[in-house]
Length: 132
Length: 138
Image (cartoon, rainbow over all chains, first blue to last red; front, side, top):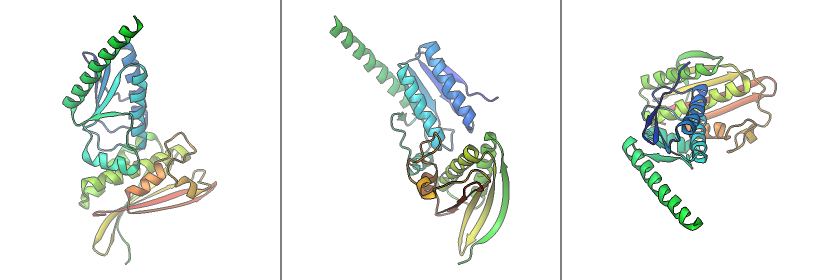
């Protein structure tokens, strides 16, 4: 059975999708990622789809699910590297991937996660002040 | 003007993994007629949506891949046929956001937006046939 590797990089998990996804593989990735976030306490997930030539409604839904599921586990998900043709097709299909952070490439995605993590920390500090 | 079929090829869909070779075959044909990347992506995404519907509701089916021409235009026509439960109300199924399954309900109306021609025939208890056509420069 094919499996998409999940790499750990500091507080983040990194996934590069290099193969054409069929449903089972995408569903397994969803479960694996959520489990990994839980196990490692990762604060961010970066999914690189630059090698993916097709994102249909199912795949779009999986990306949305991953973002929502990791969010309730206190980790943000950023999808990076979408090809222009995929972006055009997704919007015409009717999927806007609302609720999913996106960035142009891995570098900007990492920067976005860092900012999220930074502002999160400030927030928790504020909360602590209030409760005192 | 008459639509002429230049080549045809049929692929049987029996399981989820068949989606990947189907997408590859469609891409091959689209590249061969010189279709641009955006149109290729739209066509393959449309095919992916329809084959997913086929697997979900009918379990199995066949896809006919044809290169067609009309006048100076060349395009790819795909016909998805299954012997599944059929669709009781096609106009309802073509509405954005409608689904009897657990999907987002974007499949059929979304697919129609991605191609140049879209037609659907269905009879309850007998099956469904969906035909889509994407022109090379469409």
